Structures are given as C-alpha cells and as structure tokens.
Length: 372
Image 1 (cartoon, helix red, strand yellow):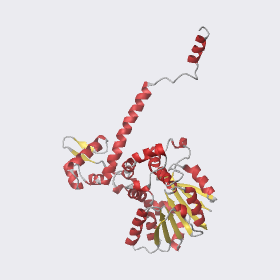
Image 2: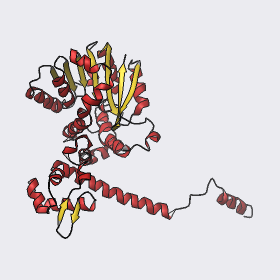
Image 3: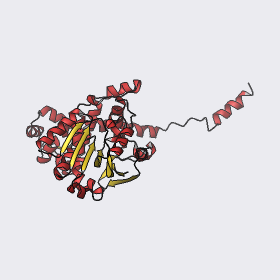
Image 4: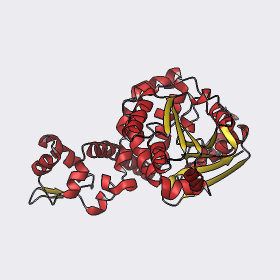
C-alpha cells in the first residue's frame, strides 16, 4: 500500500495524463455561436423563399409598405408574407417601422438580394440550403451503408445550377473568362470546334454559339432533363451551329476532334473524373486548349480554414457532389478536391502545361488553362 501512493500521485501530476480544464467562457462563446448558426440557417431558408417568390425584387421597387401592400404587389398571400417579413426583420434584412407598421428593403441590402444585382445576387445561392435539406435523409442513410444519392433525387438541382452558372460564369464569359486564354476570342471569330463537357442546360454554350456563328459547338451532359432544356433553347434561338447530346463523359470516344474543350464546375461531380480527363486529353487537338473552371480550394482541409465559403462548399459537396459520384460507382472526388489534386490528375491524364488563373471579382473559382 505504501508503495502505491507515490505512483498514483505521480500519475495525477503527470502533464501527459492531465485532462484539459473546462473553460466556461469558451463553452459559453461556442453555445452563442451555435445559436447564431441556427438563426443563420433559418434565415438562409427564408432568403431562398424571398428569392423564389421575387419578394426582394418587389420590396426593392416599393416605398415603405404594409404587409398587405407588399403581398398585393407580389401577388402572394398576405399571412405568409407577414410571417416571412417577421424573419426578415428579426434577421436585420428588412427594416420595420412599428409606428406605421411598414416594411422597407434598404438599397444596400437590395444590392445583394435582387435580380437587378446580377452577379452580386447572393440570394441565388441560398437556394442550395433547402435543396440539400430535401435529400438529408437519403444522405444520412449513406453514412451507414455507403453508396450515394442519384441525380434524380435532387428535384430542383438543374434549375438552381443553371441560375448559379448564369450569374457566376455566363455573365462573365466574354468580359473575363474567355479573355483568360490569349487569342481565343479571335479563334472563335474565325471558326473552331468547341466541346463543353457537363454542359448542363447549355447556357454558356448557347451564348458562345450566338456570339460566334463561324464556330461549331457541341454540349455533352449525363442528364436527359438538362439536355432537353438545352436543345429547346437552341431551337428557340434558331441556332444551327450547336448540338447537345446525352453523353456519359467517362464514355467519350473521340480523338483530335476539338480546338477548345471547356468544363464549367463539372469535373469534381464526375463519377470517374480520371477517365473524363483522359477522354478530354484524347479528344483535344494537339494545338487545342482545355479550359477547366472548378472550385478554388486547397486539397488539404487545413488550407481551407480561411476560405470565405468553405463550410458551404464542404456541405454542398457532402450532400451533392460527392454523393452523386458515389451513387454511380464513382470515386466521390468532391467539390473541395483542390489545386494539388487537380494538377496531379491533369498530369496523369497526359497534359503537360497547366496555368491557373483567377478573376478579381470571383473568389470561388479557379480557371485552369490546360494544353498538351
């Protein structure tokens, strides 16, 4: 007994075995952060509703107005509008005058919430919160059983992605994106063969086909729904220099066919991105250019601690990008694959020259200028 006491005491005194002391201030600060997170999550959902109902657009055009006046102007039910306004007021998005019981949207807020804001409209991205929430149960099951959730489970995915792409990529296409490749716009004017892999609803490619009638454009996407929308749009605009096809990018079997191949936010979603990159390399002519736009991130999570939307992107990746890839027997690359892994996979696909560029107004994306 006398020999055990000193040993027990030495264990208690050992710094290696001492448990960290509980810090009440740190705990309280974290609890406050979590409460803020709950409020922010709820606010994001309501901002999505405000965007989809065009309530923000309506408010931006009205003087201070009552809930009934706002509902009438928007063509909506007043009771729902009034409750929505409650969230907007307590969320400090909309101003409220309790004397006149009127609501107003400050111009400084409208600059980031309305369709008139163009590429600055952050309300578009709020739609991802309810979109991903709708597949939470299905993804939760994957945590236990593995596998993934197929495209068909995401009911509004293509509509939201098309809107996202329209203001983040398409709106900057001619002024910022295409000029990243020296001489490309002149080549498009003269006439070249262009392929967009993972073209979605085809907005970017249609804009290019309209601007450059001498060039020939092809769009491939895995989704029949997206291709149907793209073909309908091409017919509506009477474009004869463009075609869209349902095509699994991992099964593309073309050689030396295109002068320009583009992928806009598409590679990280692929079930087999390595095969897709190999196929792109084979389909690209020796003098051609591959323009790959993808998420700006570090491959190691430690490099993303200061990423302004890192939490959002990892969440979208977990509940969509990675899960969709795994649903089709893929590797589940995920949106945050990062520059290091992207460069490695491009090299393994056979590309020898890669230059990464960024746009001053776009903190979310990297633009890879890739050549054989």
